Image (cartoon, rainbow, N blue to C red):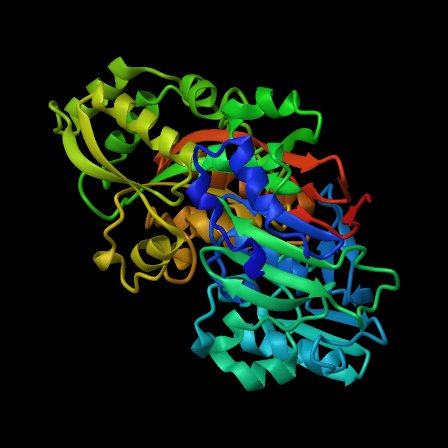
Amino acid sequence: MSDRKVSFRLMAGATAVGAMGMMAAAPAFAAKDAVMAVYSTFTTLDPYDANDTLSQAAVKSFYQGLFGFDKDMKLVNVLAESYDVSKDGLVYTIKLKKGVKFHDGTTFDATAVKANLDRVTDPANKLKRYTLFNRVAKTDVVDPNTVRITLKEPFSPFINVLAHPSAVMISPTALKKYGKEIAFHPVGTGPFEFVEWKQTDYLKGKKFAGYWKTGYPKIDTITWKPVVDNNTRSAVMQTGEADFAFSIPFEQAAVLKASPKVDLIDGPSIIQRYLSLNTMVKPFNDPKVRQAINYAINKEALAKVAFAGYAVPSAGVVPPGVDYAEKLGPWPYNPAKARELLKEAGYPNGFETTLWSAYNHTTAQKVIQFVQQQLQQVGIKAQVLALEAGQRVERVESVAKPEDAGVRMYYVGWSSSTGESDWALRPLLASEAMPPKLLNTAYYKNDQVDADIANALRTTDRAEKAKLYKDAQEQIWKDAPWAFLVTEKVLYARSKRLTGAYVMPDGSFNFDEIDIKQ
C-alpha cells in the first residue's frame, strides 16, 4: 500500500495533473484493485459494536451473515440455506451452508453461530448492537449444520434482524484469540481477507483464496479510502484515482454527469436526516421549543441549498420505503409561528445553544450552517461544531449517563437497515435506546411510544402491528423530539471500468458482483 500512501485529504483543490502524478507513482499496483472512496473514517471493524452504516458496509468485505439483502433490499439467504419458525413464533431453526471456511481456516458451523449470538446477547460485553439481538433467549447447536434460536417473546422482524449488516459471523477462533481487539482484526467468511487498517488513510482487503463461492471475488484487492472533503471525493473520480465514490457532493452532480469516465447514479433511499433535541435539558424539555425549531427551518430550501435538490422534506418519522412508514407532514415553514411558540415557552428573545453534526464532510457543514442561519432568524443563536468519527463516539455515543450528555442539538442521519419500522424507531426513540446502548440522542421517553414499539414486536398480526406503529409515529411527530429535516436520495459515482457495486437504499453497499473491466 506504501506506493499509494499519499492522502486524499491533501487534495482538496487537486488538479487533474496532481492526481495523475499520484497515479503514476503506483505502477506495480495489483491488476484488479478497486479503490472505494467514502465520506468518513470508520469507527470500528466490529459490526456488532458499530452504530454507523458506513463501518458496517465496508466490513462486508470480510464478513457475512446468515441472511442479507440484495441491492434492492430484498431478503436473501447467505450463510443460511433455509429456516423454519415454530407456530408460536419463538423458535427459529436454521439450516446452514456446508463447506464454508473462515479466513483463518476455522470451519463455519452451528457452533460458530452460537459463539457469535452468545457474544452479542451477553450484556457484559456492552456491544452497541446488543439491543438489536436482546430478544434472543438462547442459541442451541442441533447438529453441525443446524442451529436453533429461541426467543424470549415473539419478535416478528427477527429474520430481518439476522439480515442486518451487523449480524455477521466472526471466526470463534479469532474471537478467543483477539477478544476486544477483534475490532482491529476482522476474520470472517467474506470474499476478502483483511490486510491492513490505517485509520485515517485506508482499509485494505485481498482476495480470499478459500472463499466458498466459486469464481468470486472477481477482483484481487479492495481498498476503502476515507475522503472527507467532498470536492476531493469528486476529483478522484474524475482523475481515475478512485473507482467508486459515495456520497457524492450534490452540487457536483452536473460535473460528474458530464465526465466520460464516470457513471453518476442516483436512487431512492431510506436515509432520514434530522436534528435530535436533548429533551432532558432546558430549553428542549419544552415541546413548544421543539415545535418552534421545526417551524423555523425551511426544509424545501435546505433540500436545494445543501443537497442540490437530491432530497425531499421529511414527511414522517419513518421515511417512505420502510415497512409501516406513516406520512404525517412535512412540518410547514413558519418563522412567525416559531417566534410565537418561543415567546409562549418563556423565550421571547430566543436563547443560546450548541449544534453538533455527527459528520464533518462538507454537505453536513452546509446543513448545520443553513440551520444555524434559520434559527438565528427566530432568535436562537447556535454555535456549530462538526464532529470527527472519534469525537462522535466519545462525546455522543459513549456517554454513560443522560445527565452527563453534552449534546443539545445534534444533526445526524439514520437508515433502517432491516427495512422495517422497528429499526427505524426503537434504536432512536425508545427510552431503552439512550446512549451508550443506542442512538436515542434526544433522550426521549414517552411511555405510550415505548409500549407501542414493544407490542408491535410481539404481535404477528400485520393489521395490529400497523396500528401500533401508526400510533407511535403520530405521538413522536407531535412531541417533536427531533427537527424532521429531509430524506435524501443516494447519489454515487462509479467508474465505467467498474461493475457490480451499488449503494443500497439504506446507504449500505452491495458489491457481491464487483469486477473491473480490463
